Amino acid sequence: MFRLRITPDDEAMAVDQCCDIITGFAEANLRWISKHPEVPCCLSCAGVQYVPPQKCTPSGLCQDLYDAATILRLNKATCADAVAYEVAAHAAKGEPCRVVIVHQRDELGNPIPRRYHALLEHENGRIEDVAQKLIEHADGSCQTPACPGPAYGRAA
Image 1 (tube, rainbow, N blue to C red):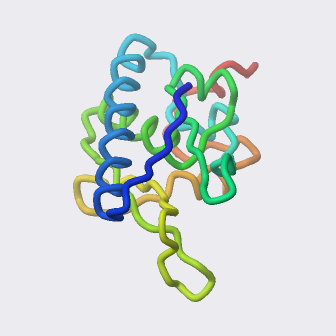
Image 2 (tube, rainbow, N blue to C red):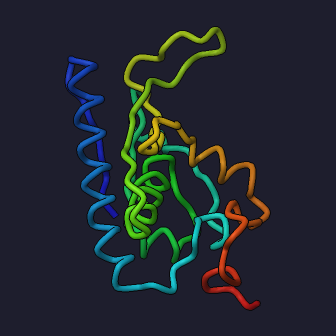
């Protein structure tokens, strides 16, 4: 686990740094997934639950980043963890995609300064909110119709 706190005054720089760091985790996850072909087709299959970033200071959120093995062991992931895992899982299947960072929005749709959300962008430009899928499939149901087998680490 790594703890990430991005604090530059420049919002654009913070977004770029978050994207670069999560992309680095995706690359590390790809190496791990390549050595473990038994991993699930999606995090929902593994029973992974979405967890929001934790408040660590009065003025901001901390982001603990988990690698693929830790996500599957703890059965929890933030949006950043989930996107880094899914980018790697898609890359392992030859389906390029990338990390996209956007501002979180308030109830009126305005960007919240220094609050970000990680998304997955497919090669065709389709944007996927992997964290939202974890919330929608919190019962452990698979997101992938062609999933080859039982949930990772759970009995069939």
